[in-house]
Length: 430
Ligand SMILES: Cc1ncc(COP(=O)(O)O)c(C=O)c1O
Image (cartoon, rainbow, N blue to C red; front, side, top):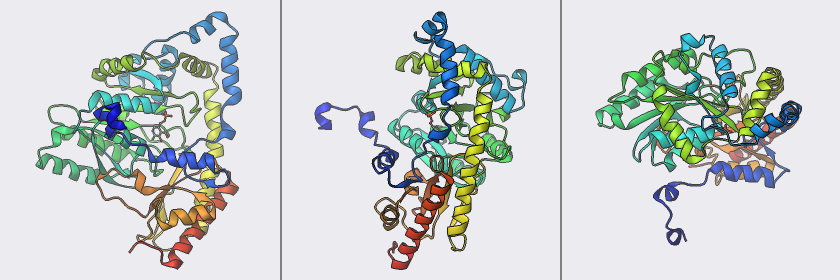
């Protein structure tokens, strides 16, 4: 079949994302408590805020005409300016200190499009991207689809471990492959899948390593800040970009999907100046501008001062869910030796490690037992790059965005029953 279609090499390399199956199961089996798909909470989506902004646009014929017309390839200037101002405030820097011009900002239809464009722009088949192991699996798939070798480096509850990164870079240097390393990818705030946040000191170390090991060209640090706004305790870390004095190493990628609405699907990046044109060219070839109406709505939300209040609201709501998750883990797994989980302080996920012998994979005994008990999770195995740090088959990701505190407690209890059954039956990997 594929042969008859004469698919491109790239299309043949691409595989379906395992998350598609899990999202499908979530929708097809509403009786299950899904702690799998990373959907945002439908109850806190900004319906009234978007209605207000949209009403403003459509109350004015000229504004409406502009919003319904094609826009520019990099996107609406007003929104790019608002994003830059917010970024600078978060890092407590002036535009001068950060040395960022609004021309370095680009808007896309979701940050996945941007991550893809970065891959298209930087990666030739055989090039290497280093990431934490585990890592945001959708991007691992995207990079592999582009022919990249994705190399996982050990991570802990503070994200990618600099010493492990240094070791990997040294190994690549020794084998003569260092020049193939194009980027280090990190989701540095409340990571997907682990919930880990990289502290400032580690950020500096990782950035220094990227700069120290560069050969004839830059090793970019792609800092995916999709979850930065979802910190629930008022703490934040300075972004990688704030340490990049020359501004040529870090590609800072953000999204409004988690903090506002994935339906609007607006992603953005602050690019190093030499990448502005090449990424713009790729985007020009792809869509010469992402949906303008959505960008006009978002710009209006900022101008009317509605964004902050919305973010404050969802932080309060998700904090309750995060605490319900951690409390339920403590209740149901606290006394089990060899079970551990990351105490995230934001985001939508926690990462669980079970006793070594339990295979959490979708064809293993735990997944089936968990379905019988009525709960769905993401098997950890899907989140590991194939190369580098070893894949740990006894791990899983729990997402708490959609469920209520009550169903979170029920879901974790169901998972604990499934684990107990698997342990009792000895139905574990040899
Ligand atoms: C770490 C991370 N980056 C990027 C994205 C993509 O978000 P979007 O394309 O909706 O902006 C996601 C979505 O789940 C994510 O978890």
